[in-house]
Image (cartoon, rainbow, N blue to C red; front, side, top):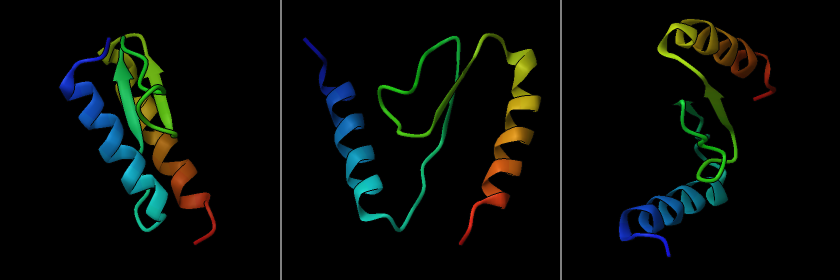
Length: 65
């Protein structure tokens, strides 16, 4: 059974992603975020955060508008 906060998170992210006007991306540190966000990255430690953010920004800038 999922709790009300998890259910709310899923509902809100699905609604935002469905409109297509806003792109959501998440980075989970030691926690898989793919179950909540279509575009989610999971890293193992905070030390990996800088590299993950740089790669994410690079990927987003290369996407067609």
